Length: 316
Figure 1: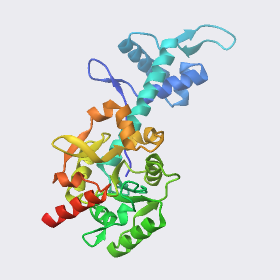
Figure 2: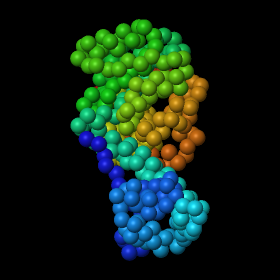
Figure 3: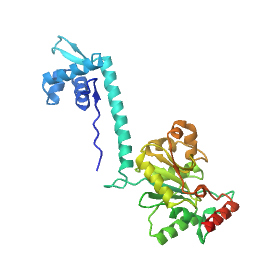
Figure 4: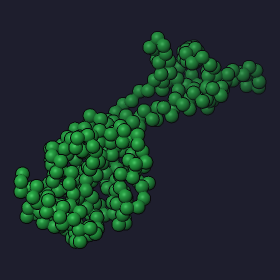
């Protein structure tokens, strides 16, 4: 299942006057130097080719082609400067439409007929410096913190990617996968920074229409909230989606594939937040999904924060 896109320009009467057919005609004219030769190469009558060009010129209000009379080989035709510029603009617009349509198609039909699901990238390569030891392996309700985060990811909604560096964390992911009969992709970052982890996650999900970045210590995150994020991604393709509370966007954050290239340029110990700071348009257009409970937005950077998480679980 693949999208089929037709791009065309209409006149004031609502009728099409320029599209892929006229575009090919002008491209052939530029290549062959003759409207009649261009028409023959496309299996089109000269009179039809003339009507197409005349109609477009009438709608645009300027000449697309110029005819040269005489010469050794007889008359010839070429694109006018305005005609060449219009052709370039049309082709650029078509590329943009096709690119956006592909991304939208993947988002709206994710999981159907071989289309990949959006990715959920769990970031588990942090150094836990404030915690004092590897916080993702700390025990929370009899299981590692990281296991709680992984359990929250609905695998029928997301392709699961885990970015991990320490062997003990990788082992914990493997033990979780075996216990849950899951098959996550485990990606190793090229360096210690958050941006390295982000690039490793993007490398693992480059075909996906979007990537949801989840901190590995966001252990109270719920399946229901991530399902709401997945629904928002399908409803609003091409937009950033954030989980939040009372309209304030927090983590996790879902980035559409159109931002992947920009995300890859982020450097240093920062993640997607750096792109959001540099691109206020993405923030203004972002969709904020309300979490089921504000405690889902907590992380456990310190032992006290982990204790608060344990208390929250005990009170649930």
